[in-house]
Length: 267
Length: 292
Image 1 (cartoon, each protein chain N blue to C red):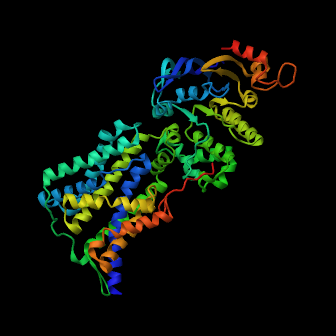
Image 2: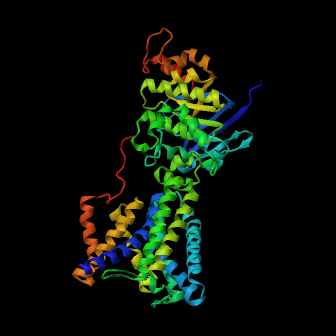
Image 3: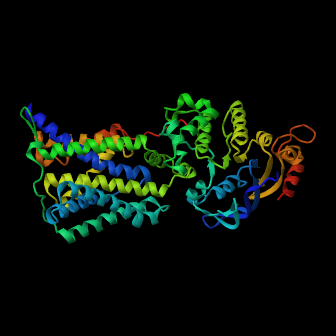
């Protein structure tokens, strides 16, 4: 079966406050039922790319000034988040952002905002099935939960909305290695069992490329490299800068002159 | 002892009223961080709509009560839609200044239409509603206002705790960006909180009008009492607003009864200062949960 494109980002530029250009022509395409991973160092524009898709640029005074975002054939650039979420795109924000003064279960309930008044009992069960750790804490305030629980909570909250396209912004941020592994296993399960298409922004390139089908590498607001995850894992540049392994197997530093030059060539 | 009990009952009923009216104020603050300086005028508007309906148009009492509430609800909604919404995303101070302007505008309009005189409602509460508990006499107005207060508080409590819309409203108050990312209609939530705030304010205005008669200056000044009430209770706590209201109501009646009626309006503020020295967030204000 020929894979169909769910999301097509065509050469978009994003400008904050009318002067600060963050994205300079980013293009990517996301096929249905795939996990796409977006890699890059801090400030490369990964989060901005996600926000350009989910419509969350507006509250930060950002705007897509050029190019187009096509979702399921519709033009959605600069639409409001209310419209975009109702089309089935849900973003899980970086840094988790729970509702601190709501209980876990109330947090999950907010996830049903896009289909208000519809029954959600089954969805709660589904979320608790993916994240069993949440069950026993469902009556406690989210503000008092651990980082791992919160990451599960915000992912569960997004699942309550029945997303067709799930945008995950650094789910591994600040979590213990074992918890990260667990989270990534669950992301993979969600993709397989729910058929949810996922765009995954990560610093942890190693983990991300293990579960992703396809990957993009960003630098300075541009895509500098793309390819199947397997190929990216084997690419010497990616190995060096994101996986921390040089061709010889020894760990090299960023200050290395030669790698600096190679890094320059990407731009 | 009887005198004490009488003051206690009066203080509680007045306090509940303050609490109710402060609740509307807190809702706007919680959802959009806006301090609404036009709150007193919203109270006055409620009182005057009721006046027009009962004394001038002779609509049955219960019906005019309901119409007033509905009218205030719509008014709050429109105020948000017309005046507040264009300012979303601007600095808060502009929005707060706008509410100061709204206060002046509403007050001017009311003065223009009704003048600065005291108007009174026809006497409609049956005397049978009054309570006699020993030597303590609770006038019908207080009985009615306490009942209304308790009913509405329970309704709103249930609304915020259990209904989806109530939970969405709390989520916006908690973390606006996250609420937006999940598709919560943030603007609708703002509009709804203004509508509910105006409704509650209008209701308090009616009751105040029954007790003291309606006068633009007086009612809007009472509306400003929400400030000590909410600062005492904690700006962002609805439960705190109620309890803050009751405390201020009690302080007022006790000072009026035992010390001097002319100190009635001063002592609550003095005690407020002392409470804030000890609890800077107010009695029930949210102390940021830092553990995240």
